[in-house]
Image 1 (cartoon, rainbow, N blue to C red):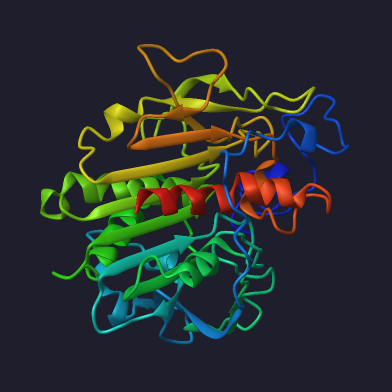
Image 2: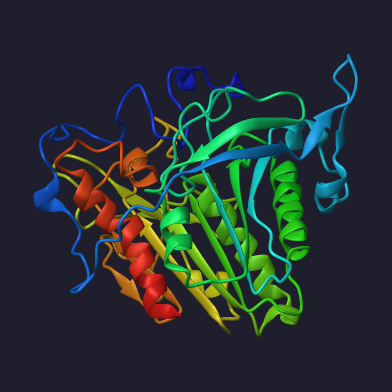
Amino acid sequence: MRFSLIPVLACMSLFSVTSCADFDAMEEDAGDLAVNKAAILPGQPEYEAAADMNGLVAKRVAKKVNFWGKKEIVPEFSAFNVSGADTSVLYNVRIAQVASPNVHRNVIFMTAGQKISSSGHENGVTGQPADWDDNCGDAQCSGLSLSGESMLLKLLDQNWFPSAWVAVGTDNNFDYTLSKSKRERLVAGFVNWIKTKITSDTENIVLAGSSRGGCLVMLMAQELRKDHAYDNINIYVSSYDGVCIKGEEFGVKSPKINDPVRPSGTLYGGWSVDMNAQFPNHQNLHIYHVTGGQEVVPILGVRAFSAYNGSTPPNTGTDIDWGWYKQTWVPWKHKEIGNPFTEPSQSNRPAAVADTIDAQLWWLENQI
């Protein structure tokens, strides 16, 4: 259990698709939320599920090398070896390569959110099942399957980004409770690693993540856009209720901006962030953040972020479209945004998928 310092978390899967209670709700209506669903773009299509993908291997960035538990970064992930890299942190980072063509015209990386224990969890962005890590050893996890209902496989089925190098982070270990310095080194490792996949042929980088994964891909994009060597490469970022630490990451701060389509009796909303300040260089940058803002951890105020327009954050948010940055509010719980094709009630799943996975795909289709 990674969260021994926070006993209240012992019964839930942090930033994942399961929890022992719904937080940030005073008297949440347990009935059908479809009537409150966020507006879907006119003409937005329903993207059919692709075929499942089976037999993948998720490798650890660092592996155990002796009986006493010593860990070393494996050669293919040597880019994670930034100054002060913690191999114990990297041991829990597991990445599966999905496609590796000779020419990397496109680079695609998608990642799930954080989890509390060593058990796996399901994710709608990557398509990984809840038992994805049942076959994990000290070096890798074999027999990984990805669902065709995921954003990743639906996207690949469209072939909008041919000749793509593709990988998924089944566990990025971007742990909310790690020290700030360890989190910063982990982000630096991910950025260095993704740079090793960029070649002179690369035209587009596609990053997507849910919850803590949503924050991670935002921070990766931020660092990539600071490097003017990549100004001519399009960067597309899809965030699903991305959760960054208030006061420590991505300029996230108080006050909370209320979700305008939140269910009755709830306090859903996002901590405010001046997105223009985080991305002063908008060249070839395209971001879409879908947020509901349910509090993920009780008492601690852990929730998604929200951009705002103007000099001060509003009390209640509105949908945003600045051209380079888009944000839509949804009424779904955090775990439903992270895995919309299984978590909502059966009657609500079509609307939840439309507001999240299919909305992100429709946005991408209109960007390229």
